[in-house]
Length: 169
Image (cartoon, rainbow, N blue to C red; front, side, top):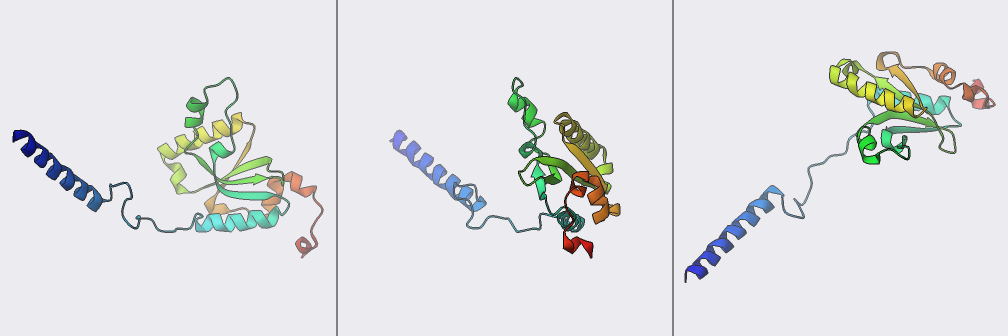
């Protein structure tokens, strides 16, 4: 009889726990709708710079919001997880590549948030990793976005490309 009572109490507790989990969205399926909303991946200044980059560098691939770990690899002989963990949550604002996806440069668009000590430390880590891989890192400030001419100047290999007749206007 005691065993039957204990089993019944455990069953009631289990059912109550499942009901609470389901109500909180903690069950396997979660709530019917998840608490996400669509947002723009680029801020307004990033959108301006993106369009300028694309226009100034028509023979290149311009990627936005790229994880550093998609651009930098860990050399053989080093502990992959240890070194990858240093960069796996970092991202570049833009990456400019040749048509065969060879990385020419990573671009960071700095704003006031980059003045904070924690952000400066993250920027320094990103710069060290990028430099170690032999990738050029260009920093532009959001208050002085480069125009198309300044962008072309930053990518001298673009100057070797024949001018598009649309660029002449």
